[in-house]
Structure formats: structure tokens, C-alpha cells
Amino acid sequence: DQQVKQNSPSLSVQEGRISILNCDYTNSMFDYFLWYKKYPAEGPTFLISISSIKDKNEDGRFTVFLNKSAKHLSLHIVPSQPGDSAVYFCATISNSGNEKLTFGTGTRLTIIP
Amino acid sequence: EAQVTQNPRYLITVTGKKLTVTCSQNMNHEYMSWYRQDPGLGLRQIYYSMNVEVTDKGDVPEGYKVSRKEKRNFPLILESPSPNQTSLYFCASRGGVLNTEAFFGQGTRLTVV
Figure 1 (cartoon, rainbow over the protein chains, first blue to last red):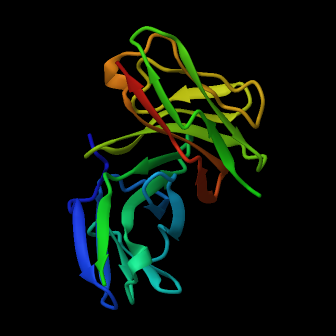
Figure 2: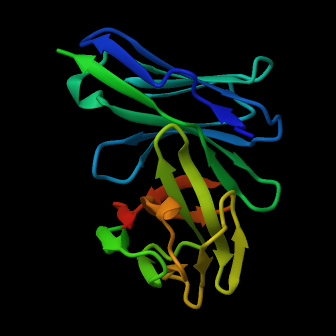
């Protein structure tokens, strides 16, 4: 039972344009939502997060949007740069006791120069 | 430098030969966990530990054991590895409640033949 879903396995975007990565979740009890970035041969690295009480969080070129009614999370990268090419995982944390970090299946973003 | 260190990075072994993958963090984090990454399945949690001597099963614990005798170390033990445990493994640590950023090791690519 996949509680966090990323329905697009891959995405290609022209350099300088906006990249939009999407994520859907099923559990309304999640407290935090996060995005991680992963390069080949490296572990995932934290990118940005948002609390369930907010609907937007911005950090430089990265903005995360949370739509609780639709149970939908998105990451906007603008402008996209070649170094943004990586696999992006959305993740959730539920503070219901075990603080479990649950990941989606990932989206491979390729920025075309 | 804050880091999570896993060893070995690469391992090829035979079915049934016990092995241990070590994980150590230098950030005094309470929360540590193990994940495996498989194509199309994202990162799935194997085991987690909320503090010394406190461990619990994640989503895919079968065939694995862990221990948390010290705060900094969280080894993953495969008592009798099987080919379906061929995967990319990541150890992660996190500060705990309300600390959403997890730090990951560089990964261990395990092949069981």
C-alpha cells in the first residue's frame, strides 16, 4: 500500500524553464512533507520541507506547495539548471509515535541545456 | 563535518553467508533508520531506532536484524542473505521530534548470488 505516490517516473525540462514535480499522498495524519534530491552513487540529500499547517514554503529557486484538500504536494524549481538533474523523492513524516519517514517512488529530472 | 558513514560501499556475497553493514553518525542523533532502494519502489524503510536499545520494524524487515547498543552506531545484519536482498541500502539519521532533515550515508550496493 503506497501511501506516497509520484506518478511521473521521469521529467525533462529545458534549462531556464520551470520544473514542476508532483506527489500525492493518502494519509491525512502526515505532519511534515519533504523533498529529497539524489545524485547517482550518493545518498539522498534534504532539499526543502513544509509543515502541514502551511501551504507554501520557499527557499531560493525551490518552492514547495501543499494542497491538503487534494492531498497533493509539488516542488517548483525556477529557473532550472543543469545541476538540478537528479532523482527527486517526496517524503512525509507522521508524528504519531514512530516519526516514520515515508518516501515516494521518485522522479528522475533531466535538465536539457 | 557532520556525516553518516556506511561500510562497505560495495559487497558481493553468496546466499546464506552472514554479513553486516555498518553505519555510524557523528551528530549525536537519536533517530536512525535503514532503507533499501529498488527500481520503481523508491526508498522503503527496513528498521528504525528511536534511541539506544530501542528498535522497531519498518515496512520490509523480513530477513534483516539491527542493533543499537550505542547512539552513534546502527549496524544492519543479514543472517542468511538471499538473492531478493540484492539492493542499494542507505542508513539515515535524524535529530528526532520536529527535526525533519534526515542525513543519509552514501549507500551500500549489495549483490547476493
